[in-house]
Length: 416
Ligand code: NIG
Ligand code: FE
Image 1 (cartoon, rainbow, N blue to C red):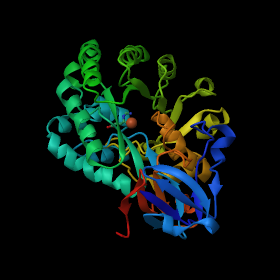
Image 2: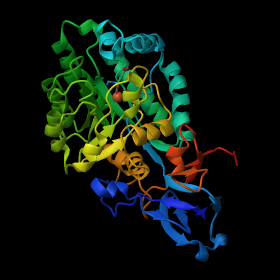
Image 3: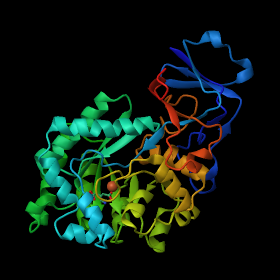
Image 4: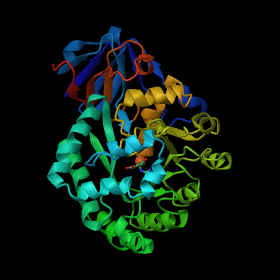
């Protein structure tokens, strides 16, 4: 099958010349191509050809992109979208001044969603989550990460991972599954935290690995969750079983998570709202990605991560929604991009790099997707504008009109 994306106003390639990520000054270089069309062969990008030399008869399908811009398919690299129930009552409390951490200490927070998820069947969770996955696809997402972490016992963590794997089979995009058994201590282990950590290490992780239910292992290093030594034990076991790690850290307190992540060769550290300066330097010039989640800072009215300092220090920055019911009930990528611009001080070019090639790097996939380069997967999002600056200017608007995965149109706003 030969397809052609014909005559877009701008092609934003986010090309890295094979490096697979952008940092420092390169984060601003989106490597724009104009007056070209894109040749797709099967599921791969075959060529960029000048519009003047296009022979339309050579193609089985022509996708007209006149007056549109083409981007790499977006990579949403941090979500918790398989959950049931609502935490609207907690949001009300937050607006009245109660902190996220105090809500947790009073028995709410993550454990409230755990109670709900344990009561929700596999099929019902698929139904709820499918709508959310579809919403991401309609915004141009072609690769999506989803974490477990609302089961927190053997049966329910496995149930969540199976839901995520089922979604990967059901939808045409790549859905990556992350095991987050170490999200917090479940209430039945509140006076036996070592017992829960032992359950993760001796039972959950071996089963997850044996049944190939997860691509990565995550944990939450925080005073209301796990210490750096506990994270180290869990990550050590995950690595032994062949699972790469990612870490929620430095969200409210900086308690050594970055050291634990570096020690265990994690692929990303996520959050970093309160990261101190001396920890920032540890992220300079290494390949571990810093995933920034400005939706959380907005939703909790909390500090924003020091994006500019991280960029100045040559860290690799990615962006994501962190879509979850408690700290970022936000699945609108345009809004996240706008927050990144206005609140993190990032340029639109930096934001595009962070939501494409660098978020692919945060999932260890940047050798095959995340940028438009010959030989890479033919994953695209096509936007109804002729100027990429509209991606942040048109705040909260979904400008995506076509999502293309492995060369096939999987979402077409105009139906054709
Ligand atoms: O990424 N930080 C921990 N986990 C989620 C919040 C989950 C929740 O509140 O349900 C986060 O912010
Ligand atoms: Fe998260």
